[in-house]
Amino acid sequence: MTTLSAEESDPFCLPVQSTRWLTGAPWRRFATMGDSLAAGTHGPSPGYANMGWCDRLAGLLRRVHPDLAYLNTAVIGATTADTLAGQLGPVLGFGPDLLHVSCGANDLWRRDPDLPATGRALRRLFGRAAATGATLTTFTLGRAFVVPRFPDWHDRVRALNDVIRALAAEHGAVLADMWDHPVNDRPGLVSADGVHFSAAGQAVLAAELVKGLALRI
Image (cartoon, rainbow, N blue to C red):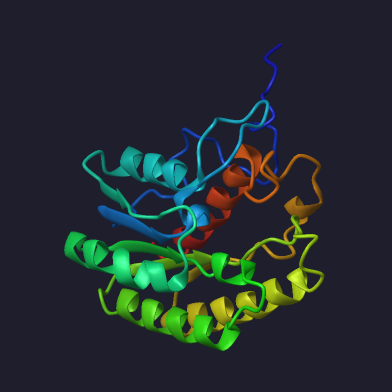
């Protein structure tokens, strides 16, 4: 009898080797920009491939187009202003036809975050991203982790997520809404750093984006 790995038996995951969802995908130039969440920063999970969501997605796309070009400019700790100043130029020069944008979480770590300013910066970023003509993807932040020194942390995240949802709708972006996804209730979802999704969460996040992209093919 063949024993399935945790990932293979996970109802929220897609097989790492599967091409069924992305058969006929037109994208050949995939880029992602933003912060550590955009970079796929994670810790290991027993039974799951040790990969971030973005590398998973690039791997699946390469099974459709082996010549896929992939650029990840995401930087750990980047704010929305950092992303605009340091990443937008290289991404525009790359000329993506599939572009992931996610940042804003690091803006929330300040004692008194300026959420209106973050929203304005995100609006500029999404507007410039949409102007490339690329299919956009993004995701909201999950509720699985908290920051004890900020009692209003979840209120901050909800406010940021509202902005992300509105921008995704405005620009027709594929949105993986992770705030209330059932995976948030799993033990071990968050890595040892207490912030980023583990490999198990990355697998689910990739699956949600793939399902959304499949509807655009």
